[in-house]
Length: 457
Image (cartoon, rainbow, N blue to C red):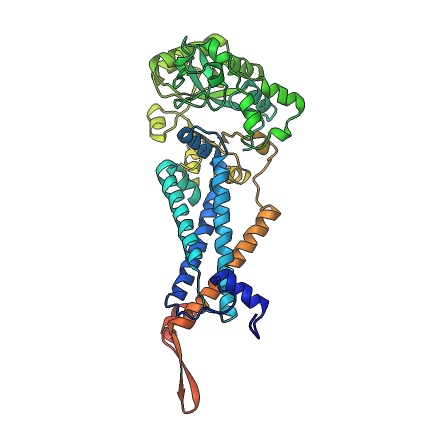
């Protein structure tokens, strides 16, 4: 250690410039330029982390798209957000060391490795923004604006939702090879592979369409083991041993099974038809009418052959996914993604006595926001998180508030230091001697420019 040098000075210099023994004597013509770049990249990573937190509600969509592309089911969203957090923390710490360098009057000699890492960080965020814009662009309105306790689309999940006092079941209906309606969300792209043991049960067979297998073959598949093994929403630990055994033995349910459950508990049913052809519509309507469920419990969403369905089942409540089509049919039920309508549009629709259901909402803060906006109802995968809310949440949790408070203060401090450094090096004020005194010239600050902020006469 050189005489007069402290450990703090050496550590700061080493971590920022990688010069442990002596300051770099090489002139850094672009030192402050790199400092500005570092500041901008840090702010960029903070903005990106905010986007990730806002889109957390729709993390299941990201995981599904990742599975479709890579044929591997993992929590892709969490992988992505962890990498983003690491990049953000790295940039914040590097910026703090840069500020220490300024305070300690050390040269801002940013090491080339840090420059490479900053470039990779920007590349990662650019890829994320590009990917969202191309593959997930419906999420951008959310930026401007699941926990799950049972395997999806199984009778166990619907039975557990009854305990949450839901007003309707939401699902997706497809038809088997022998034209039996069954419940399954995934469609095409080896649609059974994610949530069943179809590859073990029928090795070598293609299963890219619902009609590849008969109902007997579909019913023989296990639809719960995947949930216990992958624990996609970190909720398996919350299940008792009896509940785990129940989940282990789940199979693909038929539409008739869900209709019987809905009729028993007088719960409404809304669903999509994954293959909206004429035969699928006719068979599904016939199955519903044969089940004996009251027609007013059916919220009919598919648009194919809607007028024929209205004639065959006049008691169905017709639901629309488009405002203009709803107005054409004179309907009063709308079902759209939560980010597709503004609060003003929701209130305008409600003033027309239109029931507005928004999907899919899994977070309390978002549920509270849509509640205050006037939405009639929401579709959720996390009814257990929302069922105990008797009013919107008006306050932030203590941990979230603390995180926001610290982040805002750090950003304010960084901006303040950055402005000071830019002001000091921009030559916006200068010192000159005149008659033995210092004269300060402020070239951009005068009474005229201040006049808009003065009280009006």
